Length: 293
Image 1 (cartoon, rainbow, N blue to C red):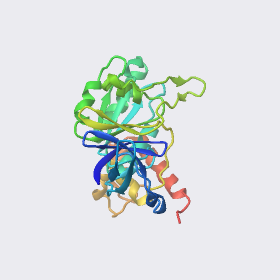
Image 2: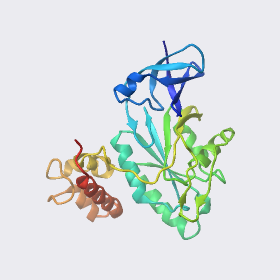
Image 3: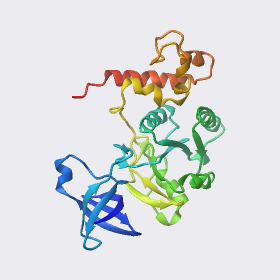
Image 4: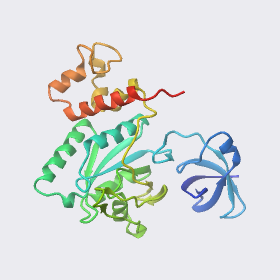
C-alpha cells in the first residue's frame, strides 16, 4: 500500500501524487456504498501495479471540504474578483467570504483586471479594497496583462494548498498563467451577449505553483448557504465577531436586540452599511431555506 494526494479528478479517474510520481486510480465500490466521493486534495491510501492501473483503498480524515468547487484539505482560498468585465461585486464577494469563513479557511482577496479600470471605476474599486483591508482581509490588486501585483501573491502560495475561486470570467486562469507561464491554461473572454464569463476550466486540478499546490477550479456565479445555520452566520463576519462580546445579549443576532455593539458600530460608521445589508439578506435567505431531513 502507498500513500499520496489526489491532484486531479476526471472522468471517474483519480490522479494521485506520491513520491514525485502520478498514478491513475479508480475509487473502490466501497466508497459508493458509504456515499463517500474521493475529492481533489484528499490524502489517500492506494495500491497500484503500474502508473495507470491503481485503486484508492482509503481516504484519510479531511480537515475541511468544499462542495463547489469539490475539493478537500484547503489551507487558503484565493478569491479572484475582477475590477471590471465583470464589474466588482461586493455582494458576491461577501457570499464567497461567508462560505470560506464557515469552513475556517483563510481567504485572500485578489482584484484582477486593474489595467482595465479608468478614472471613474478605479477609485470605486480601490475604496472597496481599502474597506476589506480595514476588516483585516489581505487584498491584492493585480493585472495578468501588465503583471502588476502578480509577484505579491507568490509568498502566500509557498507551502500551502490553495484554491483559486471566483465568478466566471474574472481571469483566474489568466492569473495562474501569469504566475506560471508554462501552464498555458485555456482562457476565454466575457460573453458579450450574456454579460458574464464563459467557463474555461472544466475540472478541478492541483497545480504546483510558487512552492505550493494551487487548485484551478471551474468558475461559477451562484452559491447557496446550505450548510450554514442562522446562529453561525454572525461568526462569518470578522467585524461582527470581534464586537460580539460587547453586545448586551449572548448570542445576539445583531438585528433586533437592544444595546447591540454591532449596530452601534454600524451607526458610528465603523462597519460598512453594504456589509450589514448583505448580512441581513443572507440571514433572511438562511431562515427561508427549506429544512433538511
